[in-house]
Every structure is written in C-alpha cells, then in structure tokens.
Length: 396
Ligand code: FES
Ligand SMILES: [Fe+2]
Picture (cartoon, rainbow, N blue to C red):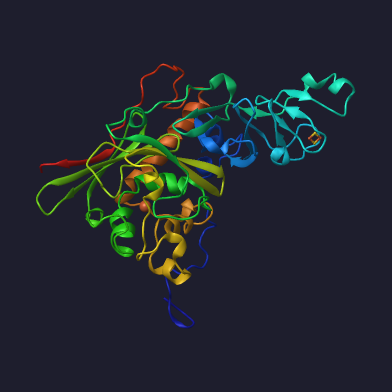
C-alpha cells in the first residue's frame, strides 16, 4: 500500500504513545513509594566541615533543610522554614546553644526545641510548645549522615569493612566532587539514572573505552564478559577481561541499596578490594549529587582522580567538545530530567539495570507489607558490612 506521495513510510515519529516514567522508582518526595523507601536509610548530606558556624542550605529528598554546628560542636539539621513565620533559617545565626532566626530572634537547638522568643514576655512562656522540625544526624567517615524517616524505624548507622579496615599506609578521606567522568557537583537529572548506571556495565568499553577515547585506562576499554546477580545487599556485576598475557582482570562492582556505589577504581591502580564507597544523594526528583569516602595513600587522592576527555577536564571542554567526547554526565543527563522508561528497549546486556529495578521494587513491596527493606539493621554493634567488589587478577 502506498500513500499519496508514493511508498508508505514506517517507523516514523508520528502518533507514538505518550511517554511515561516509572515514578514509583524515581520520585523521592515524602509520601511517594521510593521517597518512603529511601527514608528508611541514613544518607550522607555533607562533609563533616559543612556543618559549621555558617548555616548551610541543603536540599535532600525534596526537602529544604539547614545544616549547622552549634557552639558546643553538635551538628544540627532542621527544616529551613522557621516555625514562627516561615523565613529561612539559612539567614539565621549560629550560637552556643543552637540557631537563631534573623526575623524575630527565636532560638532553636539541634533537636528543634525553641529556647528563646525574645519578643515575648519572659522570653516566651509557651515556647516549649514549639518545635522546629529537625532530623537526626551522625558523623562517620568524614561525612554527615542524616535520617529523614519514621523515628521508630531508625536503623543503626552502618559500618563498612572497606572503610573500617585500613591497610598499612592508608588513611580515610571523604569527597564531594562529581560523577566518574567529571561534571558539576549537582547533576541535573534523576538519581536513578546514575544509580542504575552502576550495573550498566557494558557502557564502560563503549562510552569510556572507545567512543570518546580511553577515559579510564586502555585495559578498561576491552570488551568484558559480564554476569550479574542479586546479592544480600543489592546487585553485583562481574566483568572478566582477558589480558594480552593470558591473565584475566576479574572485576566485581556492586550497587548496594539504597544508593551506594561500591565500584572499584576504574583506573585499576592496583588489584585490590574496593577502595571507596560512594552514595548517590537525591536532592529532589531532577537532581542528585555524590558523596564518597575511601581509603587513600596520600591526602587529596580521592578528589584528584579525574577523567580527562580528549586531554581536558570536563569543565574545560567547549560545547562541540562535549559532543565529540561525551562522558557519564552527557549520557545520563542526556536521558532527560527523568528518564522516559516507556520509550526504552532493554536487551540482554541491560540485565543489570533490570535487576536493580527488580530489587528496588521488591523493597517497595516489603515496605507495603510492613517489613523492613534489605540492608536495614537495628544493631549498633553489628559487624561491618563486607563487599565482594574489587579488581582482581586471575591466572586464567
Ligand atoms: S520567622 Fe523566625 S523568628 Fe519569626
Ligand atoms: Fe560511566
């Protein structure tokens, strides 16, 4: 059959269905399925030094918050909007006992108690009725962790073997730079695009190996044999690369729930267990950032490991160069603010992505059934969590 103009065109863009996203997996606001799942875990919301005498505005899981450290050294995390008449505590002043709002001077401590109402008789006779909404915070590995979930389900802050057991000459370091290939600290797309990318193992030899030239090492550009599996913590990918001398580079990466990147050094400086853990922090539905803690051999090492694209750092590239030498930023932000999953065509090499989504859905089901999601532990004395991830060299 042919149209008025001749042969009938097929596969054109006309009339295709309205695209949609898996919002149950992407959206992070309070009351949404994923927002509630994420709120069952601790998340890093800053470096230790970010909690300071100058209030710092944060966006975490769609909530506007203010982080500070009072004069007694206690970190505090409160909602930005003052409980009195709603101006932001970002313009507040940090004092010995808490943070004082600029507008009418109410003083709140790190758990939101209102200590002073200077315009009220006797400093506010009813002030103990006021509570500035606050969240628990804890410091570990050079990071400030916060728990934004139901108080009765607050887990213990986990410990990780990769960050607890240091080899001789190693020290611990925290970093807040960007995604692997480089980019700004805040990445303008949905967090899941980055998190599921951890198990999109076969983009490594293409995007990082050949399309834009080798971004890590020539070895990582070799096409690996990959298998994926669900683990006790999430999903793992095993990549085997046969090297010219007949040995095999055996690499295990893990996506650990809820947002952990347990990815061994892609530059393969050494064959060793995973050196660092990264956390993908969803700021809201359309932006995220990453905090990392790792074992290093010299100060600044974590931040100094940067990809070069055509010999340049990401921020040095011109727009035409971003097009010729794309990296993680371009590929993931290029999927849109929130990926349109209905438009995808997943194939066998996307099995890792499919498994990440399956494990996340299993946790949504667990939550709906009143159970705790995987990885949640209420025992503060539980042993550190051990991962399989690392770069290893096998004889064959
Ligand atoms: S708005 Fe904060 S004290 Fe009035
Ligand atoms: Fe990548």
